Image (cartoon, rainbow, N blue to C red; front, side):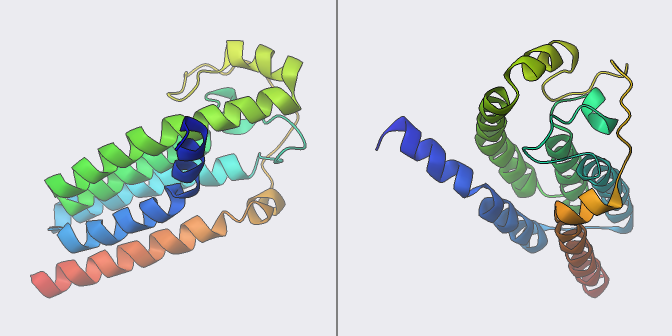
Length: 183
């Protein structure tokens, strides 16, 4: 199998593997009240980052440089990273930490590389300039530009970000039930 085919398969499996990771987190989790509340708070921060990002994203129509995109080129993935850290905290499981680390290291560099290539194709000059100002993943705390684009709930809905919220609520309800039933 060629490298290209393997990358394509890995890219397509990233969402399924993430869902599997959440199921494994529920199975292996040993939450207590402190780990649960800490993880929930961290996850909430990740969901806020994703929500803010989705409300500025006009997929393949315009290069996103407003809102969180002023601080990192991949705020949706940063939000996922923060959510994953929250899940790890809540689960109190080395297995969950290992799965999360392996998952993130396998899927995200490939996804980021694929999206960078796509942005270069769609917005060649703009992206080259943007790339000089905003870091790839971990944010800078200094905004590089002011943009007229404001957060839009319409974009949030259009980008189907509500699915991440529903998934998060389901995960935390199930984890809470597990914690309550184990006490």
